[in-house]
Image (cartoon, rainbow, N blue to C red; front, side, top):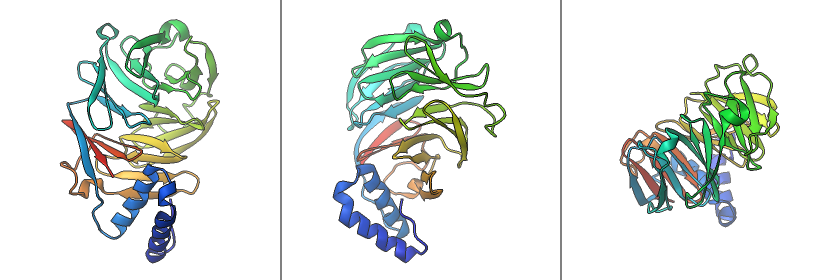
Length: 294
């Protein structure tokens, strides 16, 4: 993000950057640049509602292509395109409670079934491809957080010894962190894991991110506002509260915030989760997911 000492200088730099390079930067960066301009000048950005996905979903995420994946209250896994059209659906009721979807690889979807302690793999049309029983292969139970690793294995937090661990799909342990109980400087209540190919991020409570390298070595803890969800884009952390969107640069410690709750574009001022993919903004409230283009 571009930040300067004075507002006038900041406006000039951002405007010049957007005009000169707008056609060459990713859509999500255009979105953030536009929001800086709109917020700075008290204008209203142009959002267009592309579609709505009705439902009270316990979890949703998106892939890099803009597709939406949701978990219903009945543990249905549903996939929608970037306009909200349903593409496919699956349900494995024998697995019990599904709690997480990782669509970091659009061609292979990970779904975690907490009741059975299983990580199940699907193709992009939600056809079953296999599974890993984390208790049988790794002897670990009561896992709260798990995600896909950059090399198509998976990371998980082991609550028995307070370690972040990585394994392959056969359940072979590949790397692990040291015991984090004392060095993490926060109560270890893992909620979400994310591997962006460079770092691994562990959301441990409402306002902390633990950062690791791809070998599982602990680097630092980042304190943030009480946030509900997060993404990583070019090493910038994009995260959201129930009302606002934030972008934080861990290298420069710069932070920008955007009051989405004040925009007249949206039908509610409270969001359960917010995601950003390419030219789409996804806002989940208690009864639907709104899909907006910009």
